[in-house]
Length: 496
Image (cartoon, rainbow, N blue to C red; front, side):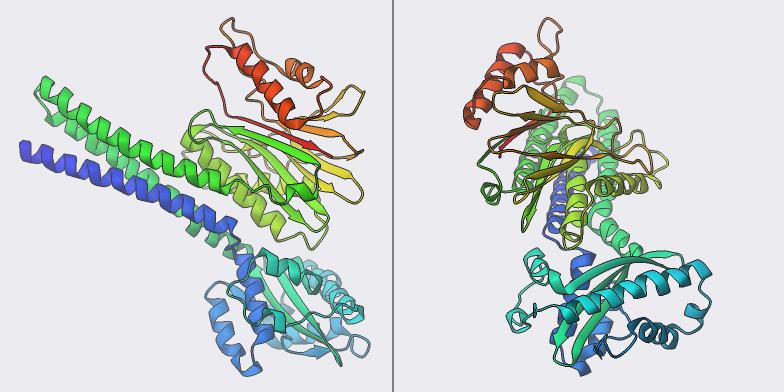
């Protein structure tokens, strides 16, 4: 009996250790995704390698790319003068000679899409680079240690991304066009949606699956430990000791997870280029939570999202990390083209639905309420789209303007259309964004803090944002008194 109990305790400690390692694995995988370690970045990296390689090295480069489901299109290495040849017919011939019957037997609508849309886009992109005065210097990229967003932004004027259907699969087409004296040298690769899903499963879903199974096994061991113990006093002593050790291990793992989540919050280094002042207050209900915020800047545009994910604590933090990964993947890779915020929110919504379709035993949906905005610092135009999250505008000597959030939540229904709005801003305008954690806080009398009280508090004439933030939370603490914080809270203030 004692030997069995001892073996169970050793197994218990081993499984707890595995859970800690799996949590670390999960957060490191998410962190790697946020550092642009994505299929899209790999595809662009292969195009740059293709441009820098000698022509004889292309077969080895193809072999390396195909291991990641990235394929070179026909026509690589060719120098094309769009004023001399018809590029659409040229690429149609290349496709025919490369894919043969697969191309000829395409459904008529797919064939027409490739001929009339995709090949036309390729022609336009080649012509844009051919007629442009901007020449990309390859010498500046020969000593790169890695391909990251800075490099992608640097080559964005020569890089084009298109989406198309091929034999029933959705694909992204990446075209890198380099100017030459006699024309344009092109390098083209494509990536299927399946490759992106494979990358997502490997980096995020697999650690979650292992974590769930390990946790279930831990529960089974714990139950057997309880059954085998027949001495109540000994049961209490030993289980108390085990629980304290487990609690210590879990607390340490949660502390580590908290430090990782904090490190994934965006730095404020770029904010001062777009705003006179800004303040962000982020306080999860527990050490980690479902509230998070995200930002990205690209030339004259600043993107910011405030996100309130399903749940709080560890479950909420996992959903928040996946959400930030989606924002990073969609916006960071597409800022070379026009970004419609409502389409971004709709795509993230469908990604959540797709990730849950194979989970027949799910007990709840995962998603979020939130708001995504883009500020153009030259035109002072603020575009935004919202899922149940309001935006408040404070203008000097005027009332508070509230722009109510949309009625739909992200992650619960497929093909939701999110409304996009625009605001023309003035100097010294102040933008307030907050998750609903502050509105839903109760006090000992059962009253809620409410949005109305929040608007009343920010209606004062205070223009210093640090004092304004202190004023908000002094009032909040005074209201809730000895009541515990009920939900995660995030408040952000930006001064134009």
